[in-house]
Each structure stands twice: as C-alpha cells, then as structure tokens.
Amino acid sequence: MSGEKPHILLVEDEMHLARGITFNLEQEGYLVSHVESGEEALEKVTMEKFDLIILDVMLPGIGGFEVCQKIRGLDSRVPVLMLTARSAESDRISGLAAGADDYLVKPFNLKEFLLRVSGMLRRSAWYRPEPVEEGYRFGDNEVFLLSYRARTRQGEIDLTDLEVRMLSLFFHREGEAIPRGEILESVWGYATDAETRTLDNFIVRLRKYFEPEPSRPVFFQTVRGVGYRFSRKS
Image (cartoon, rainbow, N blue to C red; front, side, top):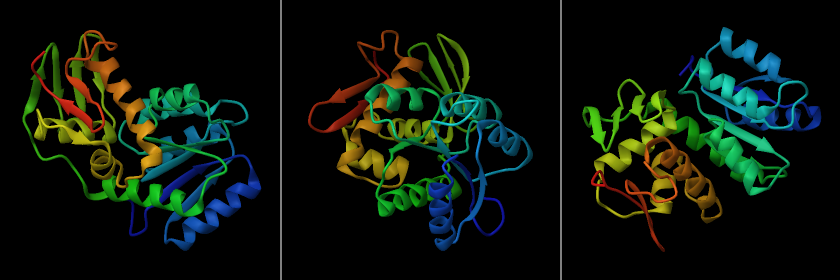
C-alpha cells in the first residue's frame, strides 16, 4: 500500500457528490485524489499508484466502462468500485465485464459505501493467495495464482486481484459447497444479502473465461440455496 494512508482515486464529475465522498473518506483516514473525467483518471493511473479506484460510470468524454477496461490494461490488480445512477442488471454485468470488482448504485447508504471501501482495501492490502501450485490445471485451463495469469481456450489472460482471491478460495476448497455470504466475506471483505447478485454476475465472468460452454458450467457449479462449488473434474 502506498505510504501510511491508503491512497484512493475518486473519478466523479458531480462536484457536490465528489466533495461529500472525499470528506467522508478523509474522515476515515484515507488519502483521496479527485478527478472529474476519464481522461484525467487514465493520466493519473499512469503516473501514480493507487490502492483503490472509485469510478463513476457516467463521465464526460470517455465513459466509466471504457475507463475501467483501460485501467485493467495498465494495472490488473488495483481494486475498482464503480458508482452509477443506473440500476439495470445489464449495466451491472457491463461493469463487472469491464473489470470492476464491485458495483454500487446511487444514491447509496454512506455506511454501506464505507463498508465496501474498507473491505476492498483490507483484502487488497495484506491478503495474497497462499501458493496452491504454479500452474493449477483444470480442463484446458491453467491458472498461475502467484503471477496473476491464466491460460484458457481464449489464450493467455491477466487476472485481477479479486479474481485471484476467488480462484484461490475455490481451489483450496475444491468440491465443497461454499455459501454466498462466505464467499463475499472472504473475497470482497463483507457479506450482505443485497449483494449476492454481484457475486452471481462475477461467477458469470469466471465461466466466460474458463468453461467450455459457459451456459452449461462444469467447473464453477451453482449449488441451489447455498452458493457455489468448484470441481476440476468436468
């Protein structure tokens, strides 16, 4: 983590909201840099290291989804929390597909927002996966947890910090049905019933990476009424 205080980049063009978010984050002891556009955000990311990026979807110029994709090309590990006034499921999926780690719809509860921030910072700051094995194989896939890479049918991909944490959890507990709340707590750093849809959409992302047929998953299986189970036996 950069320095003693976690350094957060806030990308928000609504100034009244940005001032409120900045004030509350600084009250929590965080260092906050604020920019109003996607172009400024990308420039900042190329010049500085951040511990978390809070990114609005509706920005002037380059939109939040595209900014997130470009950030992932520069830094696959920095956690990204997307903020938006849109609540449609398709927008949530688009945000996660662009590389976001979490998604919060405006207007949001301040306590919930700060919980998300602290959880994401806590996990990214001092949690790193224990070595399961370099080159964890299942099906036609090979995952390298320590170097944040994977080989799939689609070719080689870079993994985000959150993706690595989730894969590490599944690999360590192969064959076990893991409750949704436990996955949220272990990977995101918090557990709320309201955000199981974020987890469900994130599983869709993993299936697109690794499943031969994402609509008929064999590795990342849904356990109805419980959560998810990973099995390398297809």
